[in-house]
Length: 153
Image (spheres, rainbow, N blue to C red):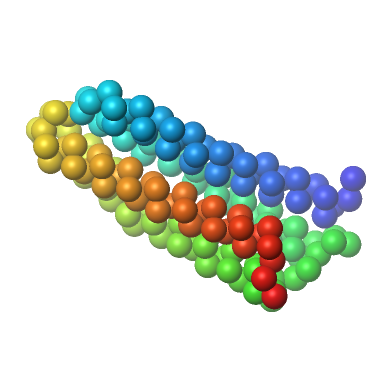
């Protein structure tokens, strides 16, 4: 196994963790919505925890191993190709969405739940906004995967 293949393997494992986790979260979100307000709020709080403890580390690992894959070893392609630049843009968009939007909404949800209880309409609305931001994040990541597969010139 070459250094390039090692970095590529770690990059793919990171991507699978990040995207597979996002798809699983969408399936669980669907079940939580159907189960009612309390379950939806519990799920949204679990999603916020997962964002910090699973998705953020996986996204950082994806970036680091992607850069190493592109720049190290016999199979390297460099960082100047369009598809790699598009991948950076996608990663940056998810980082901003994760840090600025998902983080802010998660904190707001926690505070509203403590203040009003899980069945309050304001809490339910905030939980739904959190889930929408998660949907947007997943769409961006899937678009990056399409970019990586088709590698536009």
